Amino acid sequence: MPVGPLRRVMRTHRRAVRRTAWIAGTLIVLLVLWGNGIHNIGSSSYAANNSCTPLDAQPDPEPPQLPDTSRDDLPDPKTIEGQTTAYTQTSAIAPVDSNPELSQRLPATVESADGPQQTVTDTSRILALNQNGGLAAAVVGLGLGCNLIGRDIATSVESLMPGSDDLPLVTQNGHELNAEAILELAPTVIITDTSIGPYDTQLQLRDAGVPVVFIPLGYEAGVHGVEAQVQAVGDALGLSELGSRLAERTNAEISQTIQEIGSSQAPTDPEDKPRVVFLYLRGNIYYWFGRGSGADTLIQAIGARDVATEVGFDGMAPTNSEALVKAAPDVIIVMTLGLESVGGIDEAIKLPGIKQTPAGKNGRLVDMSDYEVMSFGPRTASVLAALSTAIYDPEHSYQPEHGPDAVEKRVDEIRQDRAQEGDGA
Image 1 (cartoon, rainbow, N blue to C red):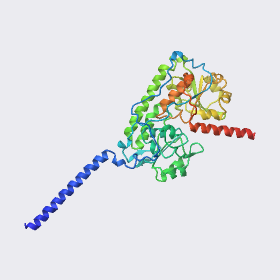
Image 2 (cartoon, one colour; image 1 turned 180 degrees about the vertical axis):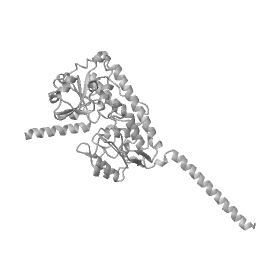
Image 3 (cartoon, rainbow, N blue to C red; image 1 turned 90 degrees about the horizontal axis):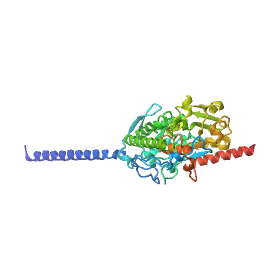
Image 4 (cartoon, rainbow, N blue to C red; image 1 turned 135 degrees about the horizontal axis):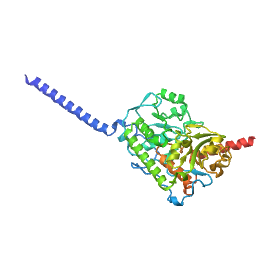
């Protein structure tokens, strides 16, 4: 072959070798970066709320501390008089990992609890909306709290992550979703469940192109259903591994708290345990939360006698004075706003049925925030600790100067409405 053509062939060959080497090297670099989270740029690494300040990561369980009171020094829970409000002492949630983007895998395709599959490609602007704030708590625990861009009425981001700015409220008239307010925030994913609605609004948001993932309701399992809920949120956000770790941490905190309550607060003799019912009050109507409502698991977890289970009362349904008198509870658990809706403790103990019970005669109602008491998730251990202490050791229960902002605001509104009705009469 002549020298000229041979040189051209050799130059072409060398260029091909260099191009192949460059492509191979580039692929290797991309694969390494992919494994370290580059595929998630623009998702969890972007904080929607730049002023947000999450707590330091907490990989290991840290259950709440109960008062250092000897069980021998505690009063007989059946004879305690007066109302006690149960407050959680540590509402802020530490993320299980401070760098969730390193383990996040997007896109994430999951089956929404309402049926259709949803594919999440971006978690930079999250809305987590349900009736008790548990879904937002899970998002914070997974390390994406600073990506929350709005809230429901039950969620106080300030309490979940100290130092963060207040986020816009996207619910109206209680727990009714406002589609216009939500779409204005341009969410990239919505995590929700059927405790909030209306469903047509949630479908409207999905039709607008936003992935809307319904998380299965875990009320029937109650305390024992936390793992499934947390894991479902983690899966939807491409954080399955962190979901497992957060679920394990939360379950460990719950188990350790239940064990501590059993060893230091709850009576050991079944006959000494207080008889407890959970009532949902609204005006002159009250519902009994029975077996399978979630409230039964709370009562059992704090070592009390769940009257609903003993008599075989299932679900949530209106009750009557005869049934309540027959149940003879020593303690009645209620939600704070429900108690306020009937006019407070003085009016509540006058309600038919309640006033004839041991709890009514002793004024022994224990109330807790509507947005906490049935919030099954990363805060459940704190809920159990607060509820147990309010029942067994009220003298040492945590009593802050001010309650949760959302609750106090609603209490003021209820009182103003009642005052206006009185003026009108």
